[in-house]
Length: 148
Image (cartoon, rainbow, N blue to C red):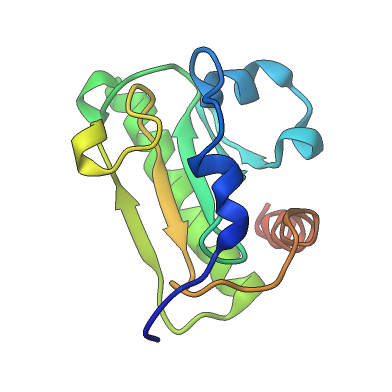
């Protein structure tokens, strides 16, 4: 693939950032479908990326606001990794990708769009897929329920 076109992302790139941490706003809302939350662990959760690079682009994040992995307790890190493993299985079940990209960007210079709240990105590919967030939520939510 030579270029990836995602012109709809201009709303994100050129838009006004919300006040405070967008991930903390999602956590406080407590409306899973409205905020695209797919699954919850003991101290972490999985949410669809609102401005995805592909269908099924999700993030795993701790409930407690922390800037990096070192800022989490051992129990929070363990829960995050366990939920990350569940997420990997759900994305594989829902999309059948040949591979996954899993990454943590810590700090703005490292590419973190939300630098103060650590989160892990999971992508099944690096191309744009024509699927709405509602369709992705429904597909992945079903895959998480099969896991439970």
